[in-house]
Length: 115
Image (cartoon, rainbow, N blue to C red; front, side, top):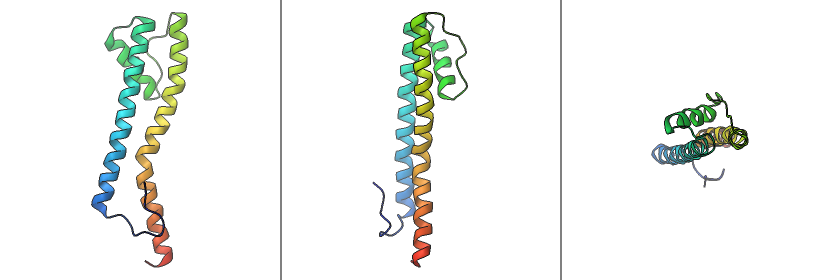
């Protein structure tokens, strides 16, 4: 996916394209995760879509739910979704930072070799 240390640094325009692809994958992952969270809150807690959106978005953002779950199934879903949301946050951050960090490390490696 990325150029190896033996290749030249990717042109800036191509780097921006790579960065945009990573951004859209991260946004797609977050939107899919938001939809799953909304479905779960609507299904297990009978929340309106606006309240389900708020709870799912707050969990994905790392803030925690607004409405405490009241049903047993809702509590199980909320716990599993909270664990999942934490992983999604880390994965999305990794997707966004990976191209930048790779380019930075690649540039330092090329400077060490004198290219």
